[in-house]
Length: 187
Image (cartoon, rainbow, N blue to C red; front, side):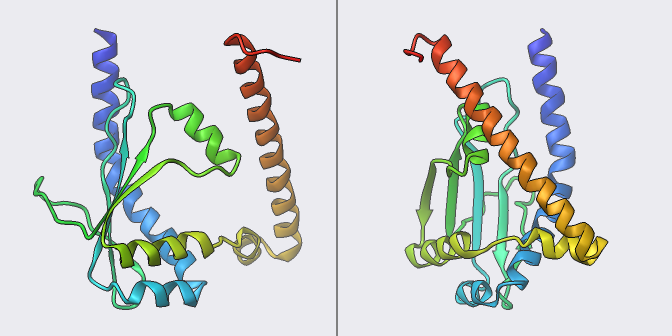
């Protein structure tokens, strides 16, 4: 009974927070796109087209997250385009991310490994979107500099790199321990 309650609660929380998070994600993605004019040039060719991102193969105890849909604007940016009224929209590109083991997926991302992705739809749109994903970078230090000044931004960026390295080391150690616990030979 508790499992059903938890799943319903998580599902309701996801449904309530999902649209707001989608809109914030759109703002952040557009911030990144605006900083890289070549990325917008790749997307302008697909103005008006939609891409849908969905998580697949989630464990049964997790609520199904909403499908994230974005429409490319004439300026080569993105706009949040949620499906309305449960209608089945036709997306020019559908990207499904396999997340059967959320903890392993998080560790993989932390270690710089990309998730397994299935792509369906227009090949030219997929190729341009792939180029954008491969070439778009977030200059965290520049954004921090605008907020806190260059000296503080340098310190915060250095601390962030150190924290990321520590998390990667902890993830590697946890994976090594888990492999040893599963009967794999250890040193």
